[in-house]
View (cartoon, rainbow, N blue to C red):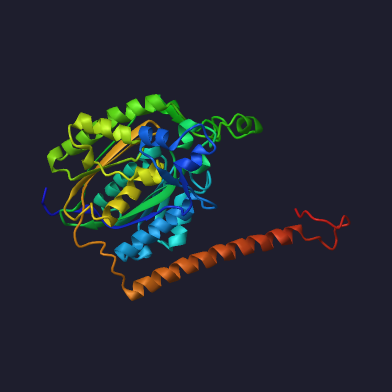
Length: 386
């Protein structure tokens, strides 16, 4: 496992969480619940909730932080992948909005939706893109605004979810660090266990779907719990088996931050102490595709995740889907030291992207005004041009 070959290595990381915090006590003021009830069943104490921020805005902040850590040039990014189940729009993709805001002019961009497993799916695709030689640098983002699809009157889901974003910048290297193995799976027979029923082609938005509150996330909590407890240990074992790495050599398991009870049950099945799972769900709640990269950022910040360590990232969620990524945390990369010219270059790219967006919006308004402007030869004095 120490051979020198092309790897997709993490060279930058960044996170973003909205400033507005909703505590358990805040929820208890409007729901039939309590701080003790939420803590004892989930381990969650508070969650960050977006106020006037959409998914792309959070993803952009996390991505820019990752670029700062790597001191990277956005022009060198070959692909932007955004894992999300709460895109800004059905179309265009959130990834395209991020790609433009970063000034990543040479990058392709695409969203993917694998629910709470999305970040592991995106990492697996980024790894394949780099191993194939197609790209040398790929930006992977997990971002979700779960507050936009959670029914605030439903105690079963309202207490669980928060908003946030996290990003990893992957670069091609020939050293031993980086992604060592991936494993993905799905079982569509469980699709209705975790679903937003309306808003797609199966049940388009209508006054009736809104009245029935069908645009909110619904969850069969007991079934999802059983699924997660079963699949989390299996995913860890499968990804380790791909490179014959014993569980004893894994320093950290960073799981999707869904529920402390799920993690404790999985630890028992794996016969390891629950302390080997890195958790920060007490601060953020379940942020879906953002939860794993948010945890990575916190683990780096508090000194838990160190160079040379083996870490398993494991996600599970809607679909039903699951995925795991084994990586060795790198050394000598992503130091956070910024060169002045690259700092200035990124600043110029970000500002130029903002100017382009403003220019397009102004041009669209001018075109609209011209179309609505009365024509001198129009006897009605009005408006529509053909």
